Image 1 (tube, rainbow, N blue to C red):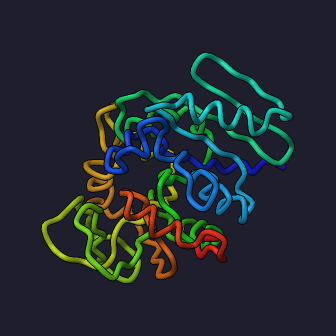
Image 2 (tube, rainbow, N blue to C red; image 1 turned 120 degrees about the horizontal axis):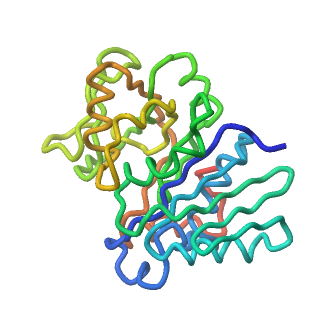
Length: 255
C-alpha cells in the first residue's frame, strides 16, 4: 500500500566538492558501500513505511532516471522526455526534472503540485545519511503544530558550511542562520517535515531553501527542531565518502 505522505529528495546539485566522483554521475548516484547513496536514504524511509518518493533532479538527471528505470523495469513505468514514474502496490517513485541550475528552494517549488493536497511532506537531501527515527520525527512535527520541522544534529567538530539552529526554548527554533562565522554544536541535519504553506516563502528557481525561507519561517516562530544525537554524516567531499566507505562489509550505522 502506498503511503500518502510524500518524501521529497533533493538530487539535482552539481556536487563539485566531490571532484572526479561527480564528473560522470550526480552526487546521489555516487556509491557508498556498494550502492548509490540515494538508495541508502530511501531505505531509511522505507524502514518506517514511507514509500512515496519524489526525486528532484537537475545535473545529470538522466543518470538517476535511467538507474530507476532499469532497476525496476518489471514495475509499471511511465516516462516522458525528462520525468519518470515507477510504481507498484508498495512503492511509488517519481523522478522529476527540476532544472539544471535551480537552487534548493527552486527545486522544492517545482514539485509543489505533487504535495498541494497533503497536510505535510518530508524533505531531505540526496547526500546525507543518518539513523534518525523518521516515525518519531513525524510524530514530533504533528505535535509541534508548526509550519516546518528541521532535524538538528549534534556535531563534535564545528563545520561552518552548514546552517546553524538557534533554540528559543527546548524545541522551538529562535532563528536559523546559514554558514555563520561562529562555532555551534547543533546544525541543520537535512531531514525536514514541512506543511504545504512553506511554498509561499519560496520565490523562484534562484531561492535557496536554507537562506531566506528558513530564516523567515524561524522569525515568525514557525520552525521547530527535532534534536537527533545519533549517527549523521553528510557526503560533501571525497574524505566524507572515505569515512562512509569504511563501513563496507560491516554493519552500517545509518539504518
